[in-house]
Image (cartoon, rainbow, N blue to C red; front, side, top):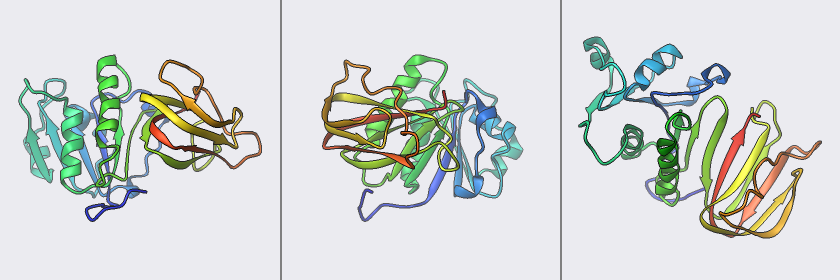
Length: 230
C-alpha cells in the first residue's frame, strides 16, 4: 500500500460513455463515496442505475453524449464543461478531477473497448498515477476485464469466487522489463524471472486448482495486470 500525508481511502466510480458487457457487472454502490460521469457516461450511469445518494460530478465536452439537462445539472455536485479541442480525453480529465478532490481509490467503468487508441491511452493513465502517493488504487473495468498496473511489491489474485469474478489473470511488462517476477499458487508458476514487453509468456494464467489465491511478486518495473472472465 502506498503511504503519504495526502492519501485518502475514499472511493469513487468513474463512468465512461462506453461500457462493454455491462450485463455481466454487479456493482455495489455502497462501496463508493461519489460518482463521476465522463461525457456520455451520464446516460450509462442512469441506464445502470448507478446514481443514488452519493455526490455526482459531471465532466466532459459532450461531443459523444447528450448534454446534461437543467435538472441533471441542478442535482449534480459539480459540473465541468470541457472544450471540444483539448489535449486529453474526457476520461483523463475525470480521473484528474477525482484525484484533485481527494479520492484515493478510483475505479473506472469502461475505457477498454471501442477505439483502440483510447484503450491504449487509458493504460497510460495507469502509468501516470502508478507512483502518485495520493492514489491507492486505480483500475479500468468492463464486463470482460479489469486492468491495473502494479509497482514493485507483492499482491494476490484470489481464486474465482465471491472475491473475484474473473477466471484468468495475465501479466505484461509495461514500458520495460519486469525483473524478479515470481508467481506462486498459479497453474503456471515462475521464479525470479525477467519478463520483457516482447513476449506473451505472462498471459492466460490462472489460480491453481485447490489454491485460494495466486501470489505475484516483482522487484523492478511496471507490471500490467489483466483479469479476464474468459
